[in-house]
Image (cartoon, rainbow, N blue to C red; front, top):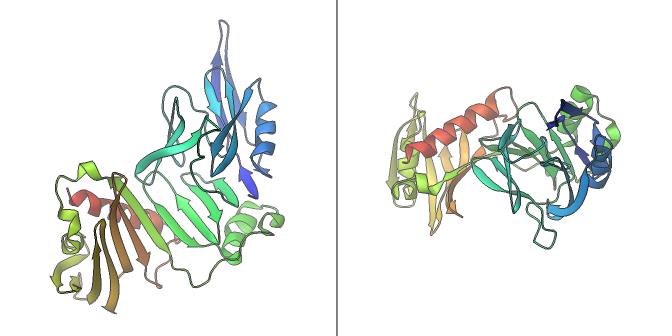
Length: 298
C-alpha cells in the first residue's frame, strides 16, 4: 500500500445549542494509519481496529458517525450517497453499493476476514473512485467499472499534470502490462431476471441497440451491426454463463463474458483496441449501454 487520499468528509453533531459542520481535505496519506491520525485531530473520535482491503483497517466513530481512511463520507444510521457509490452501516460494518451491487466494504470486527483487496494507490474523483493495484487502474462508480493498464504515462497525465500531485507517489508502483486490454464490467441482481434468457448469448446481443441481428450456429454467433458491418464470435458455454471471443470481422468488443455468481448477473466486455475507455464520456456511455442490455434480459 502506498497512498490513500481522503476526500472532504462532512458530518453534523447536534447538541442543545448548535450544529457543527466539519470539513476535511488533507490530501495524500502514506497508509491508513497516518490518515486515521489526521482524522482524529479534527474532532474527538474513538479509534477501533477493523478490516478492509484485505488488511486490518482503522475505523473511527464520533457522535454516531463512522469514518475511516478510503471512506469518502461519514456514515451514520441512514444510508448516504457519495461521489463513488452508496454507503450504509449495520452491525457487520460499512457496506458500499457500486458497480451495480452492494458488498461489505469495511468490517468492524477485526477477527473476521477483511473484505476487499489490497491496493497501491487510491483516490476519489468528482463522481468515481480510482484504484491502482498490480499494474491496473480501476475506475468505478455506482453503475460500473473500467479497467485500464496503469501505465506511467497515464498516471502522470491524470495525477501529476492534471492534479499537480508530487511525482514521488508513482515511484514504487508495479509496472503495467502494456499488452493488457481495457475492460468494462457491470452487474445486476440476478433475481431481477425473471427467466433463463441470459443463458442465450444471441438474446443478449440481439437486445443491443447497435446490433440488427444475432444468430447462433454451432460454436459460432454471427452478428450484423447497424450499418451492415458483420462479425463472428466463437461461443464457449459453462454452467454459470458464457463467453464470446471475436474471431472474424470487427465490433466494439473483442470479448464478452456473462456470468451468474453470488446472486448477480455480471457482464465483462473487452474493448476493441481502437476504443479508449478514458476518452471523455466514453466510460459512462459504454457502462450505460451494458446495463441497459442486462435490464433487457428481464
